[in-house]
Length: 122
Length: 354
Image (cartoon, rainbow over all chains, first blue to last red; front, side, top):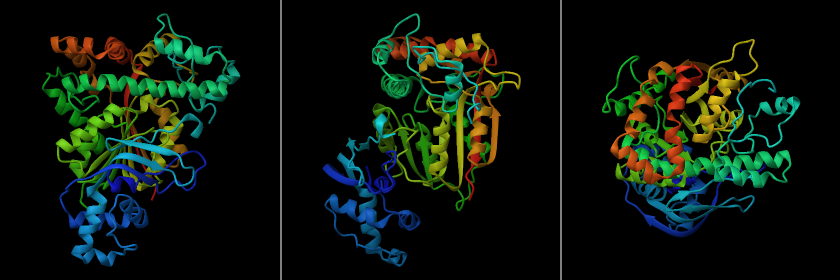
């Protein structure tokens, strides 16, 4: 699971208002090389919840992202490379996604999150 | 909303005790999945549900029913996905054919691709680089055929969700093999509780998954919820014929036929295309369009049957398992349903207001 995907996932248990972002518990992660596209990064930047990305990348052991970011930083090649690496190249293979409000644990196996709810959570 | 749906009750899942008419009316608006007795042949699944039913309240009944259905769907696709892919490839949906044409086996894959393109065209999805979709959700994604196709076509990011862990893994593996791992990703999740915040996607795609949804209202609300302002929603799904104004329900023999199909394919109750349109209207969605494409998919089931009767088809079926075989045996019922104008292949599309 890439952190781009993590940035879109939220806990949808009934009654939960604060289901995003999910905390990461990392058992196994890999780094995969992905083709760099500055244009893609510039287009996706406005849709990214920055703090969630920073926290998620830190839990994967990558702490090179600045705490805050604004669009002027998209002119910097150095920033784009770090953004690219965190967003697309860090993959959670085995671990858990944890709802910030309820603590509910969603497993990630072989890179695939299982977000199915139990019937009493619906 | 209570009398919105006049629809079949899935016999796969029926009340152990027949509900009173007033019970039925109250429940119709959410088209619940109901648990119950088996049919003339008791399967393991029916036995399990009967035992679970023994001391349940009706609310718990519905809850257990949903779980049984979801597991049934997941297991069915876990078991049968491989054999389908082996014979038909990575698109698990009908092809779109010129009417009255006898299609050869090599035409089918291009017909399945044409189904995707005709659906996008019907819905008026923009193609220019500014307005084309950048973020797509594939609801009931199977092994990701549509997800990969759409991601490639628009250069977009696509998220796929499926109940089947086997399908999700296969979808991801195919994406990686095709160099699309950076564009598409797959999750095991429930279309009735999509794990996404509101307004995430420019294109919300449901290709032949709606028939599995036990609560059509919830299904459609979730599609609308995750759609961004201005997004296009496309549903291609199996429906029963629209009821005429004087009708309260389908005829008994029609219900009987659909019930047999429900049983084999893990489908809860059916509704009509008109029912979907009413749901979309109730959610204030715009540009609602619906069409009956049954004539354009007519060659499909005969072709699937022919493929099952080949040496490869038969040996694969025997190896794959009982659920898959039951599904295969139900194929002539689908043809019967289409021929009787009972089953309709419908496309329903709309836009989320800006």
